[in-house]
Image (cartoon, rainbow, N blue to C red; front, side, top):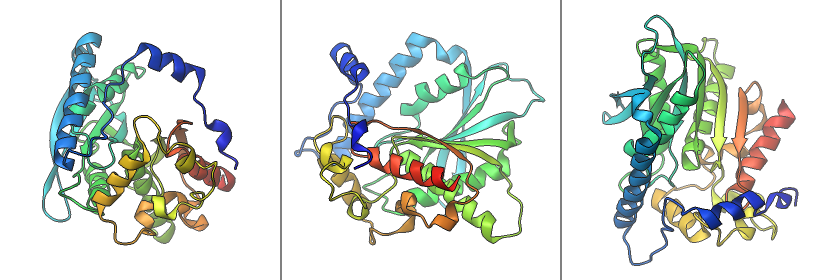
Length: 303
């Protein structure tokens, strides 16, 4: 099994958990409804974000504004656009289109404020713009609503990027966990579209950032039966045990586990040619470890 060598835990993680409280409690109570679980988790994430903003003084360095995105089913979702304060008026900045994690059920615009502000504040002059999309969540909205919202937000950005002060030739798309799956689906879909058409890209995707990405349906994972696969080794992993991943999957009500939207890491080889560069952040002691490593290997072999 090629990926079990990354299992861990690393010494850095061991030191971390001995000195730091995880900001999100383990959401494993069988007595809670999905809605109650979401409310409790989002409250904890929001509190952690607010504390981070206050401690770091990020509000003094970053400004933000909310925008409405009209979806294909004529609903509105929100995107929060973060910019450096005192941004040069005539300078078009690189744009990072970001999707939060949380199994398609957790996360809000507000829970991501600290993370998005930190990216803006830490970027070298003249800076970067972050677009944080609040796609719709389960249990109210089933698959493929989340993927449709992500694509619709990419289309919205292509129409409005310059008015936001962004450079259409410098776009990076990324996210965390479920959000990384949404980001990867956009990049793959746009790459396939460009392969099949003669039109020019409205946005030049320079790269994708996939952090602990969820890229394969658990029932379709090619490594799932191997005892050294991450789905076996990390069944009781902290933060994301198998019981929680199953809940996430069940709430999506995916009719076909082989749906290509939900299996980006298994995409046809031809559709991966010409893909923009990808950066992966992967945790060894994580159920989704092999999703990211499998996709990284496939992209690396194609070049």
